[in-house]
Image (cartoon, rainbow, N blue to C red; front, side, top):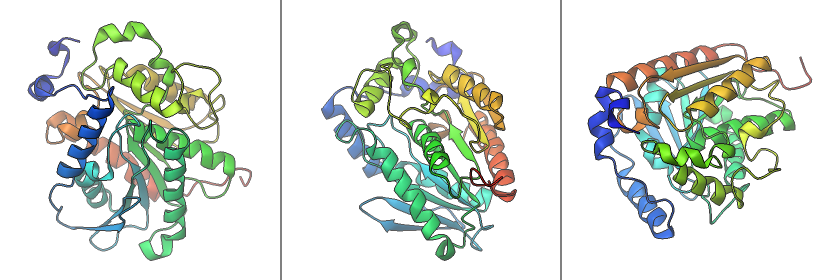
Length: 315
């Protein structure tokens, strides 16, 4: 993809960005180490950050005053094969402050060492922890949203599906940034020639194959492994999906948003012109990223402030 397809504000950063070496074991190890070493960043004024579980990587971000009684369970990205909870430290702190809610961010086991369902099991455990700790967090357990970026957003979408099938308290919303929703995109070899910026289809194929333990696009896949493979999306929580129009995931995100709406689920789809994958995380200070984050956080504030979702079968 030519650089002139990228929004002018993002071109310099994109041009300097190296390709992530996720297709080789040594490359994944190097990236994982670098993320942990450089990810945390400095503190954000007005937000208390607590690391509650070093092993699992739970971090709790509480705004001054304790927040509005709502919470967000956040899941980091990394194509299922890289990434760490520390990489979104500033993002989570700012979201807690700007949206006046408690943010709980969690790590999860990475593929290929830990294929499906390890990551989803870990995220499910984090959801249970939030529910069980709601009183100590100052949170209404029925006002908890789930969200994430890239693979983390895909996990958040799968978590919403798993929780719906299990019954009980449901997430009040799904907050999804450039979600990795459909392994069948990776099976489309013609997309390899497009050379998408930041996250391309060869890397996408590596991530899905590592997570699923089989070639992307195979049929069938286990329940809750791939969000877009679910046949019936009815009853899921309201969703916000933000993605750039030159992101590899743009088409699968648009399709998923359309399917949610067709199933009667309220879904806001925010398509950003000229934006590559994850631009709001690696260029958060740009006008284009700030605008997306403002729109997304406004949607989230409205959703967590509204009536809680009703458990399936209790409407």
